[in-house]
Amino acid sequence: MSISRLAEGLERLDVEVLDVGGVTAGLRDLQRLKGFVAHIEHALARRANVLASGGSGAPADELLSHSGHTSRREAMRTARRAETLGSLPSMSAQLGNGRIGTEHADALTAAAKRMTPDGRETLLSMDAELAQAAASKSPPQFRRLLERLTDHIDADSGLERSERQRRAVTLAKGINHDTGMHWIRAEYDPEAGVRLFRAIDAETSALAARPEHANTPREYLAADALLTLTTSANRSKRPGRVELLAIIDVDSLGSGAHANTTAELSDGTPVPVATMRRLACDAHIIPVVLGGDGVALDVGRSRRLATDDQRRALRAMYRSCGVGDCDVPFDHCEIHHLDEWASHHGETNLNRLIPCCSRHHHLVHEGRWQLELDPRTRELTITLPDGSEHQRSRPHSATVPTVRPAA
Image 1: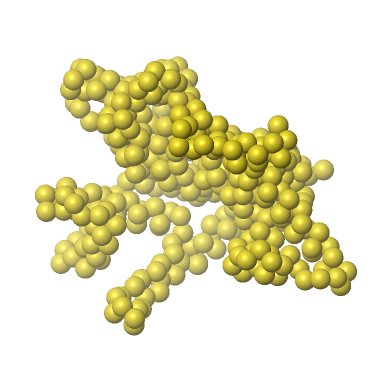
Image 2 (image 1 turned 90 degrees about the vertical axis):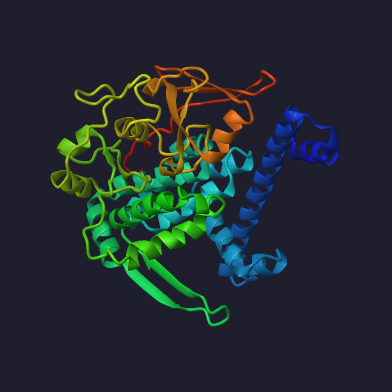
């Protein structure tokens, strides 16, 4: 369908009478139209820069911020995105036909910016592979893939980057004189950040379990949790154990990084393989192997909640909510029994458990979504209350495109 016919069809839509299929089709067509508009905008931005370099007219970001009636910051982002896509015809084509969004392109622009010149050249040479990967992933998933991929490409500088992050830890504090509120802002390297976040999450959950906090927003409780952790009268005592879950494939652990290395913390943050091997030297190794010796992954009806071992096994397969392309992190999800434990006598076995964010958990129970999980592939099929199939999905892949030398 041509863009003109697409636009005419959207203009004629009577939104008030659409059924689910009509809404879905309308959103799909709208995404195609938005992609086409973005594709033209980027082409115009690149042409503006060419003209400006020859002394004719203003640079793209100036024209965008004035002619486009957008903020200076957004204009600069669009101009940078346009330059990146100028070197990536496959990615640009995917945007033009609506299969990816501008957030995918922004993630790639940011990834290329932080790489070495040689690494950037290698990354951009993977245009076709990146375009295919972007079309199958949400922007957060694509961003995490790029983080792992850029670490593999710049493998020699991975440790250097990790050391720079540790040296760049900062904390600033002050008072907002307009409101009288005190503020604090800190940045930590990934390893320290995950430890801190897990400690705050654990304390927040403990506060949320109290009856008096039943209706208190979680962000308020998180602020109280940080205050409790840092100002408690018992702060001189050794803090409670905070588990740091690190996931690495066995080949990387034994022999070092390779093209399809998986090395990340529980929130999906990539970590250099050498750092992971250091952590392994200082830790009790917890094997996240399905059916591993001594690991009780299936507990039947001996208990209602998933065991720690089961949660670790699920985390090795899922970075986020197990429903579609939902990007709510695994650590913020609940473990859902596909066979309800009480009413359907469901068993707490791994092949009947998936992580679900709060929103999707409510849609399963209150929204009466039906879930079916293939025990071999873990492909999840969602059926709506009217009997129609909503979607099929599998756990988000931990693999990255194969790294090949720049042409």
